Length: 233
Image 1 (cartoon, rainbow, N blue to C red):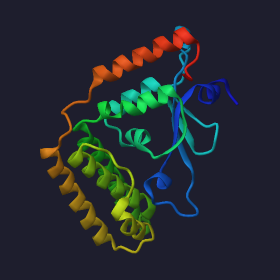
Image 2: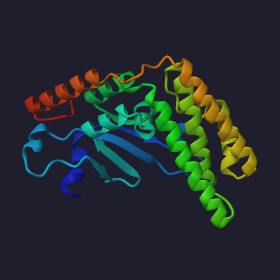
Image 3: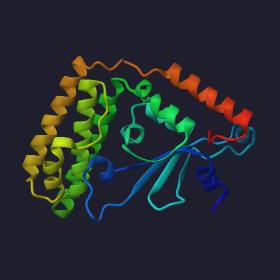
């Protein structure tokens, strides 16, 4: 194990399972996709070589972010990052990890409309291109795109993030199996795009995330790390 990977092993404050297993869309063949947040010791930033902002491993299908980079991405409304904070499948959580989860509402804003919609458009364009080249898209990717649009719409409508597929589970799994026609999928995508746009107009979410609150917490994390010599508190 590399020195950098030891950061994940020794200084992870939150580790969760995401993907199909967290969304209620898993099959027997589904991977266990782990995502986490680690806090590099404050003193490590005094070196010329700074701690890595993200790391793969050491477990298969595991990816982690250093807490500052994680907060930066979450404030931008990155869908994959926000889902880490809302996964029901928590495998590891320190006191700092619990604080980060409690801070989740501060990251939410109407920015999620553009980030979720942009991600969905990118994935749909890739699917269309693959369909033209090879005859059909990767249906699993289409399923996840649609679920993300549902999650984004619900978030804008309610102000609360839910990542479970809920009542859409069976239809989404039918998409994964290729049982819906391309026209049906396109129609559903168009309906969800319109739902996202409608939800933006009346969303209870603030215009901007609470950056000051997140920054104050991050500063406190750095200070506590320096004082205690450990981030697993």
